Image (cartoon, rainbow, N blue to C red; front, side):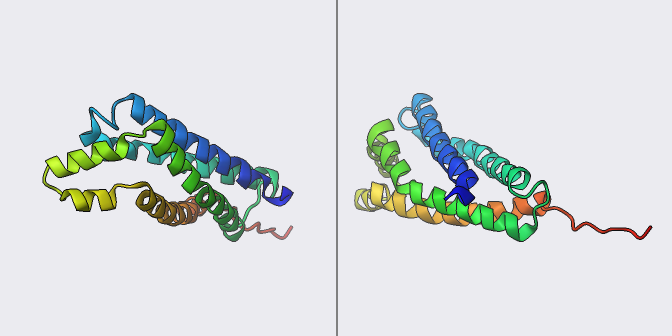
Length: 165
């Protein structure tokens, strides 16, 4: 487990930042009176999520690989970080929708039905905890691996070439 201490630390920080973001969204009214803006405003979390991956991979590069990390080493570290984020996702969704913002689903269902985007049955089938957990698991896995793949293009170390004297 010591081998993955950095990934565990940053996975937990990702989890906590997501909960803090949900609390911020709730307090700013994006889950009730401004819910029609939620889909747009929630995208503002993306740079935070990416920065967490960048800082995690930078720390891994610095502390584990003494500043020289290959693309594959970084990608494997990001894979472990993504696995930790995915494992914490159901708990994050449960806390977000049961404790932080328990009225979110009823509010978004009402908005969707009132705007004519879905029927009540369709909206209730889509906006519920189990569906959000399922979607979040898939999204966390895909975005974690994609973020890692792109970030490592920039963070990988170039192979050292020793010049003849």
